[in-house]
Length: 74
Image 1 (cartoon, one colour):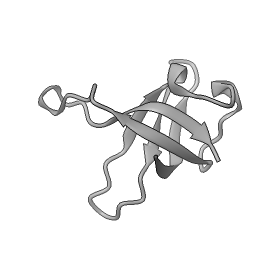
Image 2 (cartoon, one colour):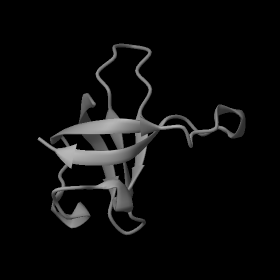
Image 3 (cartoon, helix red, strand yellow):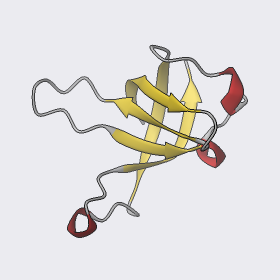
């Protein structure tokens, strides 16, 4: 499990991004509302700490970066 902070939430579309805190070359991690565990997506907040697991579903060839398969609030 990795730890990060919710950077952006798009409630009306059901997704968000996690900042990994990796410095200037930080890649944001995409997550879908269905990946959230231990809380409701609607109860998440930007700036909130979370743990997450990366999925293999990201496709950098199509402009898609890393994707979280599970997201759990800390």
